[in-house]
Length: 140
Image (tube, rainbow, N blue to C red; front, side, top):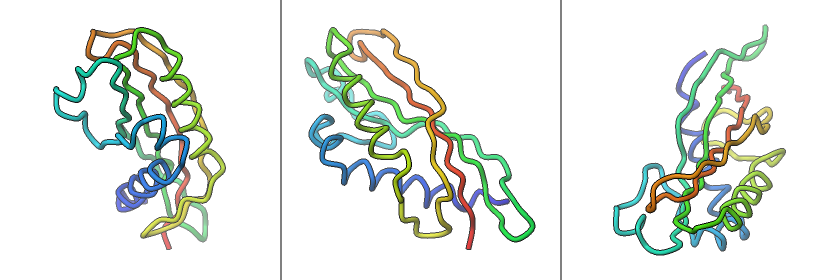
């Protein structure tokens, strides 16, 4: 097992989200590795997506080496309600679950949804939905 497949997996997830028409329209193409500048966050009704935390454990067989990558994708919304954030969260799930995600190194064996949590926050981040996924990837 190695951490070498983490970056190729993140790039594949990002590419899948940017390429998905529903995710692109609903997010306005605002998909980030880190939260955007404060000005973007405080725009009324601003919505964006961040790729978040990740935990990796060995996933190996007699013939293959890889990892089980548990990672988060978070929808941030300045809207007063959850409607648009939930619609975007659903589109993210549709774009990732059981979809082929070409990787620059290794390959995706499976990607599944582990769960999600919707929360209320401060005015700049009034609504936040964190989605958790597990990707099984193999090297080679």
